[in-house]
Image (cartoon, rainbow, N blue to C red; front, side, top):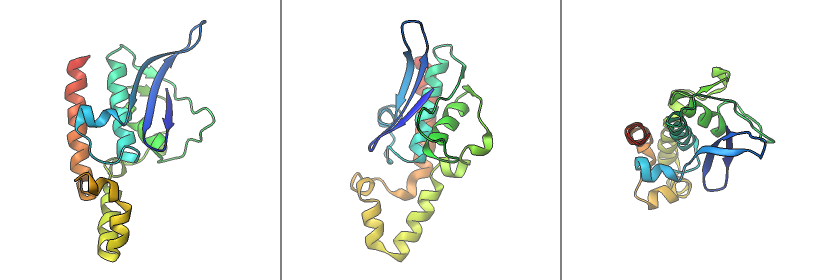
Length: 166
């Protein structure tokens, strides 16, 4: 399993090695989240990384794949990071990944509760900075205070839509 983070999205892929070269068994992108689960939050934060990993894990199980090894390449694996969040999502979906659970973000971070706390603080202390920091999602009609509920809604949608598709 590999993870890639661009300036706009988060990607996860599961590969299989062969004599003719590696091939991709399945993949998921944070851009898939809005189509499958109605995700309206940022496509490049910890909650979207978790949900991308969850989607990847569900897709892989539909392909009779239940165990993977995470390959970081040249990227650093940082405890609690977006990469760790994607790994946690895939693991929570049922994929067996050998990883130290202490390196994974806790549930409150994967749900985006830290974002909601920061947004509340920023809104009360500096409305201009709040509007600047959350300008893209506010322009889309999404509130940073809705991350936890949006997370749960998207996760349930992935669970029901991907389970019936595989």
